[in-house]
Image 1: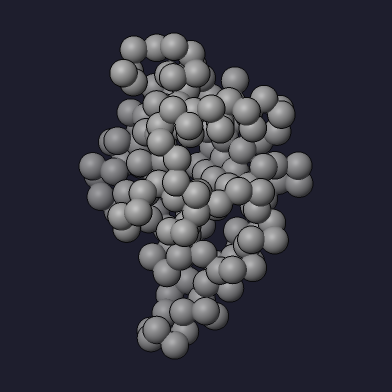
Image 2: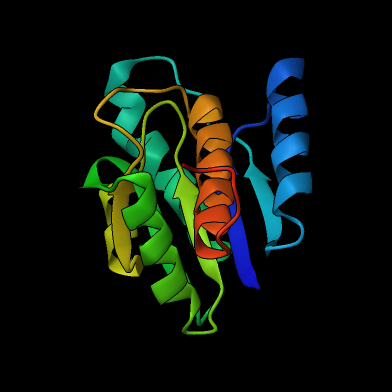
Length: 156
């Protein structure tokens, strides 16, 4: 069984996202133990504050990283994988017996300092998504990967 932690900045405000997350967490329960850690977003007023804000958010994220975890940053410029390749990736790194920690940044993205703590950087798509949508999309893709690994009918 995979052990997954998703660290995300901000909380869902829309009921639809909450419902989708609830559904995917329920579907994932036979395959993975999932923990969601929601950290507060740092407020900012101007684009000039962006680096400072991302740095403060990164400090909060680092405090949530387990010592022996495999850390996977979700980034626009991360490696792209199809669903089967993502399933193979999860099966391979999940086989190490370490917790997998996915990190989703705020609307500003992630601070570059997080790279020194990460093992992998992935992108969900060349398209840009809100961080809330990316969170649900990640949960769906982890579920899809688990069904591929376990030869279930969800992915054809």
